[in-house]
Image 1: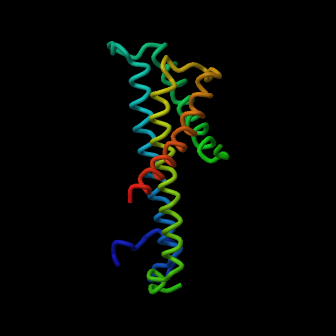
Image 2: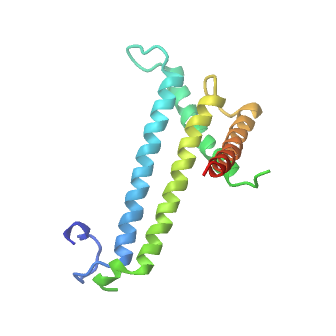
Length: 88
Length: 78
């Protein structure tokens, strides 16, 4: 059970509760999801915005990257809503 | 709550819920990636054109339609 022990749970009890476990699980799932999302965005925006790598990032490459990140987040919302709207 | 709660039906239910949420997130992520490639052909702008946003929404819905067809076809082969 040592792999489940949580030194920062704040509880003085040595027992590990369901709530502690679920908190850790949710945190780790959220972290894994965030890392995967970032990796995807990096790939997409590199492909769209850095077509000929120069010796530094140009202003247009930087603004392309900013827009790309915003658009990708927006796309995620569009897909998410479309998936759960009424099918025809 | 004591240590034996880790084997309870309640915990299993909570874990199932999280697993389902994770699967939904994964599906949205995969679909967004695929539909982005299909629909966003040029350089990203400061907003989507209406054809781009329509394409994205269509893409997700057609994928769901396709999933149903595939499942039905697969089931009819059992």
